[in-house]
Length: 94
Picture (tube, rainbow, N blue to C red):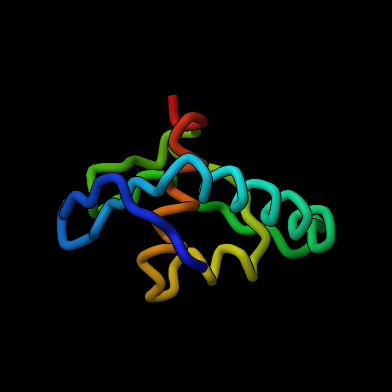
């Protein structure tokens, strides 16, 4: 995934990255297609939108459902992927 970054902020040992608007639109389209292909209640995980180590909580407003493979990718070492997913999920944490 090739993202153009507008802002990179280190918080609690994690790099929070703000991807460009174009890359977010592209990512949303790809994720929607993947979500439709792989969604099943048998393989859904709960994900913290703001990680606990970055000040997040277990409150329902900080949780979302992700397909288990998507969740695994979010927690991979891909800073770009983590940043893009965090950016997409941030509006739902309010």
